[in-house]
Length: 212
Image (cartoon, rainbow, N blue to C red; front, side, top):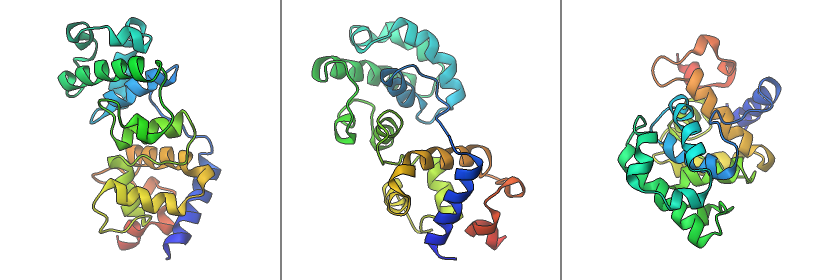
């Protein structure tokens, strides 16, 4: 099966069965989502959603967080992965927002990546979810699922190479949704070990399933 046909079948399936996907991170504004996404690196959304309500209440704006100290922030996120570095990233990010961006979360991926703790994946999430831009964040789930299904070449070595193949073949108006489709499919169905092929609606056009 050709790659373009796989993309069409995938889009048709998810458009019908999961028309309005969204992030599982809980937030009330763009600043809070930025915090949550930074914290979610190599950590579960479930864990992040447990710690962020108190953090958001204590530091509701970039100004509040920018003027905080390590010892004030750390207790709120000590249960997430890499809490020391993430505490420093959050404070540094808030300071830059407050001092350089008038306390507003920037819209472009380029400006977002200037913020401490924000790499391309995080920047793409914010640009996509908040500003509905046609960019696609490739995390471990998207990377794995895209190669298994046949949306990306098996020899793709980097998230950027997979990202480029996906945005090339997905209509611009669906790229933001496709990000969530692939993440959630990888999180609950096409899991890393023992993928749940028997429960998967993508069997008929999945390259991995064809081989098994």
